[in-house]
Amino acid sequence: MNNYGGCTGQLDLKSKFTVTYKHVTEELWENYHFVGNTGRVTVFTTRPYSEAFTTQRLDHTDFPLYTAQKADYEPLLYCGFCNLFDRYLQRLLPDAPEQLLKSRPAHKPPLQIWLLFRTRGAADAAKEHINEAIAEKLDIQNFSSSNTFRVTDLGCSVGPNTILAMQNIVDAVELKYQSQGHNTPEFQVFFNDHASNDFNTLFTSLPPHRKYYAAAVPGSFYSRLFPNASLHFVFSSYALQCLSQVPKEVLDKSSPAWNKGRIHYSNASDKVVQSYAAQYAKDMECFLNARAQEVVYGGFIVIIIPGRPNGLPHSQAIANMVGEILGSCLLDMAKKGTISEEKVDTFNLPTYFASPQEVEAIVERNGCFRLERMEILPQAIPSGNFSRGKVTSSQIRAGMEGMFKEHFGEEIIDELFDALHKKLDESSIFESGNGSTLFALLNRIATV
Image 1 (cartoon, rainbow, N blue to C red):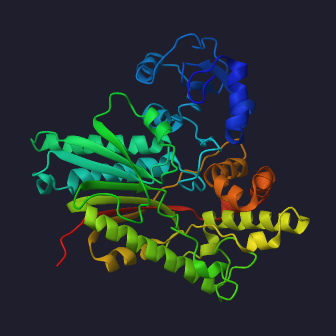
Image 2 (cartoon, rainbow, N blue to C red):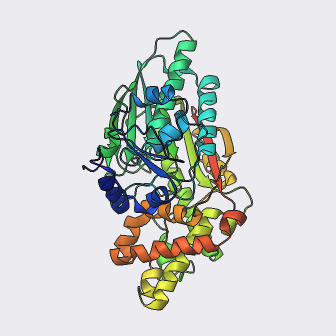
């Protein structure tokens, strides 16, 4: 069996899942039925199949046709090796259960921090907003001098979400050109993330018959990445909550903002919260300044980030509540002597969850973009007979494991995330906390 290709049999497949994807997929093996694999797609269903298609080899391009021919086909729950669970869930199976979310292999370096649930409710709403914006607000006359339409995903990671988002944008822009009687331009899509991102995995998953030329652009999106006035559409999803660095003050013992005994700003002192908010504002200003030089006039930026509603205390946002519980797990380990208190005091999470008012103020202060739309997307929290704590801790581990290994050592990882899973299940945060996903549409305007 290779790392991302086909499987030699059920036992080998189960072994691979157990080792590499165990923190998510053991729910599948316990509660669902393994049907088989189609070369690259691993299939689980809600009940046994008398007609399992383990012997028919299908490629991704053939799979939708095969599915359409099987009217009684039950939902595909997970495609572990090619990581295309979301693709099938959104495009083919709108009523599929959402109990289980994908997870990257733990050995992949973290480039986006995935917190809580990236659900179909928010994804579908974002897609609708983007399609409406392109149809109603994108003035393609601004781009008449260019025969190439350039799109980028900033903070793409390696999963299927970036592929779906880019294809949707290209399709919507193509429709816009055709509806106005213009020749369709060529499309170029740039996938951006840090240099340590596994671009090989990402590019292996790209559709073979895509409508665009693809390229990787490694580097931080808080700095320049592209030539002047070269981009027409910038997309960034679940990436801009990640700070460029932890605020220096919270790690400084001589600072009034020193965050002793905590790993995040939730429930911390006002000075700590202010330091995080200031770092976020500084990073966003860098982001907008860089994009202002790279995006053509009339070009769009779409930002999707986990956040919190206006007026909601930081301590009541689900993402921050999870961070608080994660910090308590580390403190418990320090009390047992597994790790030192000093290690905890010198570690803080580099994330900030902004409100719509904060984002709006930053955009207005920058002055290079007009905020066309700002909304809180609907959240469809998964339901069913499964452990939310387990799924959430698995997601966080998939995104943050490298960070924790580097600071605390590899030997504490299993214990830490097992403890997080148990504490989350014992808590009431999924009922009492408030989670929001913010959608912002920015239009590049001419400045005086």
